[in-house]
Length: 490
Ligand SMILES: Cc1cc2nc3c(=O)[nH]c(=O)nc-3n(C[C@H](O)[C@H](O)[C@H](O)COP(=O)(O)O)c2cc1C
Image 1: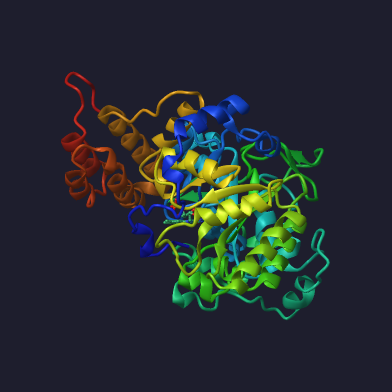
Image 2 (image 1 turned 120 degrees about the vertical axis):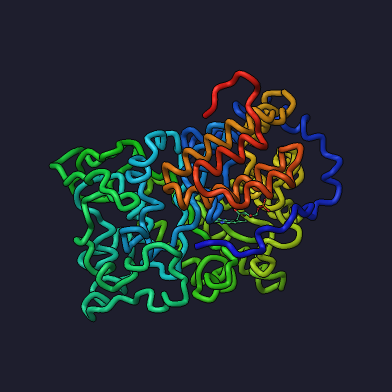
């Protein structure tokens, strides 16, 4: 899935009267004095390694492993994948690639750095969502995979009570498929994965690891008997062998009930569910029941579908039900679904919400454009932590700055040398992950965002808007981010 054009809107200040008076340095320092890393200790207790009160948000079309690793190298303690469509995950093949940590590790041996990581899922059917979530968890294991019996109908759903999936659709020899794929809803990759065959016959899983048309490895077959544990993951059932990349696993599963993209909404996914609380709760229930208890589940919400009283009641029901069902926290984007990414985020909503639910862990999202916004949002609203989204595209330094402020220092802006080095690092990671063609294209949009740190951003934007090859990239960097005299190229 990808977001629409509205995401290019320039920064709008949030609705937060009085927030401009907040002394962000004092807030950050105070957090650092109260807790190690400035984070509520319940967060690292739930997700070891999540040691600061902010994370890199899911950003469709941006937050791939390359962007996430770069963010982590600059201090992001936790990151979320972009929203991954349940059916694409179940289809396997290219549809699963974005969540396939073994495949990512083949391309980026440094991907072990990309931990702890939340895998975000989006979809419209509780059973498909549950199976997809379990598949993401079980990918780290070898041997029998319980999601198969859930998704393909040859066994009971773990923890579930609804027998709808089991047998019914399978016996009919027909799974509801992405029949509308001609509308282009099934994300851009993996069209072939949307066939009924792909959904019904998991055994077509190709053991070869193919990357950009090249066979780069083979997924190893199952080996016999272990204690059923992989890393810190409990296995949902069946024999388990040594995973190819032991320890690489999703730390949490995040359910997206927030995406406002029209084609998603029309198909009852993402933010649509805020207008159908019963369905949303069914979905949350199914995912939580399927995912092993020790894996943290979380939910992404918007403040409502729109601002009518009915939608406010819906939000409250879904929000409360999430915690009752065992979801560890909600990340609340304080815009409505109708707003998409336009107009201000309403921090007053978050303030009221957190004021009424002081015991709950809540992350806030919306209008976090620079490091000061992280601490302003925390102080103004009372959220446990902050989800950094557009504010970190082309700006991984925001995380370093935030950590520095928590340690009592002042945020440092990146020098031109640092900018060049980080652009080069990002480009290399992106090419390794996505190939030169796709990686090159992706880097244009990042470079345009990086330009904001440059003394002549307009000239950089013009130069970067058409780079695609490594040669173009080197030429644009040499022109606008010159190496100091005597330094070696790279
Ligand atoms: C291009 C783009 C893609 C996004 N994709 C996702 C996504 O896949 N999952 C998600 O939870 N949120 C997604 N979001 C929403 C952001 O995580 C965040 O909630 C939103 O941008 C508000 O924060 P901001 O105003 O600080 O950017 C996306 C936002 C943008 C702009």
